[in-house]
Amino acid sequence: MPIVEGTPIWFELNAADQDAAQAFYEAVAGWRIAPSPMPEHGGYRVAEAGGKPVAGIRQSMAQAPGFPGWVVYLATQDVDAMASRVADLGGRIRFGPVDIPHVGRFALVSDPQDIVFAVMKAARPGEGHVFGPVPLGSEQTLGQGVWIELATPDPAAAFAFYGALFGWEKLGAMPMGEMGEYAFIGRGDLRPGAVMSSAITGAPARWNWYVHVADIDAALATARARGGTVLQGPDPIPGGSYSANVADPAGNRLGLAGPRLAA
Image (cartoon, rainbow, N blue to C red):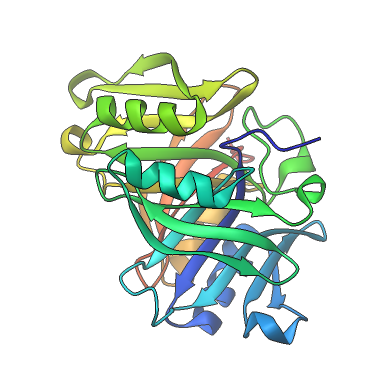
């Protein structure tokens, strides 16, 4: 069965120091990270949770400068058409479209607010184990992405843009007082995340993603011990779990979600 357009299907860190990134995220996210066994992948490292690939770490690319940090990959059936649509709607094609041997085809793009994301068609779309949206019901999603979050200076424009791309709609919102609203996005059964105002909240304008960890407090303690910074949380989220945001020692930001076992 084809993956629904707009489903998160990969998460990738552009790292200047792959060794340091690997050490940090293996400890914090509980991943097993190893170089891809395929030499044509050029030293690309694959993070696994429960023996299944969930994310990648690549060396900073000279041909695609200026994109540090994590990139969210969203599914499409036609990468070339989707990239052209991005440009038609006021975004930009930053890199590609290109094929990745044995993986699929992708393009790195940005929306009209210059926020980077990627669109991708996987070579074997039925094998995805990358994203299992909240609520966090079991250990089956440990180490996987469970939520994506767009902080943008213009939420209304973002809804128009991503709605035109993926058919996403505003599916309710949670008021955050002076920080505006946290508006949920999705289409049909796909409800991958939310949109908020970076201008009001002060959050960096970017796509963020949250990985499911077994113990949010232990993960935050490990992040601090490994030279990272806790930026927010832990804060309660629906379903009884907690969310937090951290920065690794290089400043790359990642969200965490999981229970408080000591509470």
